[in-house]
Image 1 (tube, helix red, strand yellow):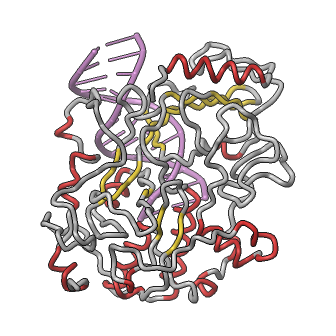
Image 2 (cartoon, rainbow, N blue to C red):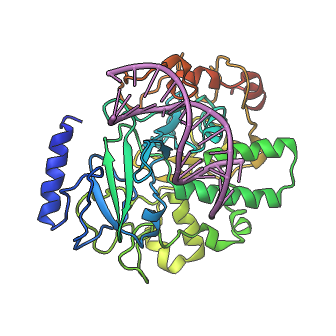
Image 3 (cartoon, chains in turn orange, green, cyan):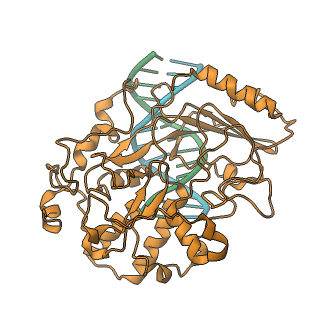
Length: 387
DNA sequence: TTATGCGGGCATT
DNA sequence: AATGCCCGCATAA
């Protein structure tokens, strides 16, 4: 990020003005423009210092959605909703699969759920998970502001995300649905429940053979048609993560280069339901080889590629994995990745500047507590004897 | 159970 | 005073 924030803003406003888009406002202005000629498509991945004006009819804007993991932040201003980015959950081992995919999980928005999430293990190498916090706004998390004014919803983003994109909200929701289906299919036992915990967290999926069974509520797994745009209103609305990926005529401002990055497994689910229309979008890169960090029996996991793609490992036995949550910190030299690094090596991006945070030692999450997330190798060795 | 929003409160600048 | 963020609470999905 070599450009200054002001440069970025100016460039974007130049670009926006060329498109006849009104950007000469700030979210804190007493009066916001109401002579808006054109509203924006909903932006799934707003980044940098962008502004958007959405229609107040836009469901996603109404809900202040984002595919970034944004949490509410109190700014002591009830008129302007402020949200700050939670970053992305990565593998503390910085493990990769054979095809170079990284694990980028979506941090839970709810504090309690996020703490629970951080006690779990990497779905790929079983190493510790690490919350990579966002520091894209002067060392602080990127902030998004939402303000409802008249028939418009004004959106402003401050800061450029300095971390990879997490899995989308849609993927997380689909996972939860699948987890529910699993719960219905497999009556609870403590062991199964813990397995499901991991699957819920990581996106681990049932075997493909089992999927049709689990897709008993097909609509649940289809992408919501209202997530991704609003102008078309009645039909043809671009879907978040849909195969079409992009709106038919999106605005240039804040163009979302990632909107076409459909998670492979969602594509696969869509393919299962609508093969004739979805087939051209299928991703041929669904891995067929074993990922490097896990026993083949555990590879029904969600893998997120560098570009945000998601795919599944080959079929797996859902009983082949055991949770290591809430175990004492231990060396994880046998933790799936062979050979493992001698210490966690988060390398998602250089962190040259410490953020101006206070009471860092008191913080209950983020990089500083990754040491608590290590897994119990006794359990792990039991399940994954060294070859 | 989790996401979301609100607002009190505290520390820092 | 502005800002950042923690926390608890309430509500919705």
